[in-house]
Length: 196
Image (cartoon, rainbow, N blue to C red):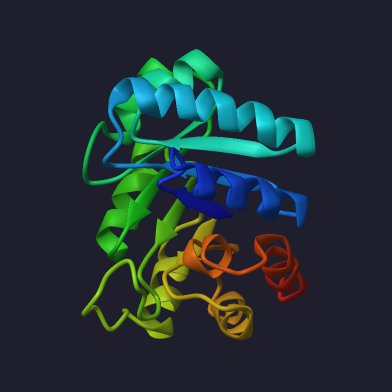
């Protein structure tokens, strides 16, 4: 999964499209700083571009449930914004995921009906400066504690992806490894080759 952070910026949107050209089939739209109108307009535009490249691409929206409603997309929530239950009530039938940082958070999200969880940060990452990452043992504990799919997030490279799968992760979620790459399409292919 690609975390398309700051997707309302033109360069980031272009990189996201390139990553989907490289084979990514799930994109998570996130931009905490964007105003509501800019977020929705950007999401509408980028979703159309992504679906033109790959009609089967899955798209989810971080926190902004109304945007997901308007565009018919999935929803992802966490400690900020609506709960899993609130998101499901506003967007019935949508896939709703949750960002967890502990076993307890993952279990709570599962009991609330989350379809999957992100668990982060597994490794040190530029998006959380100063955080050393929780490590593979913590990832393993979360994967063992819930039945829903767990996506490892945070500092992942194609070289470290295998260890996450060995720890029980269902998938991986990547941000800078693709969006900040000189060639996001080639970077996406590198990650896809690391999948089991």
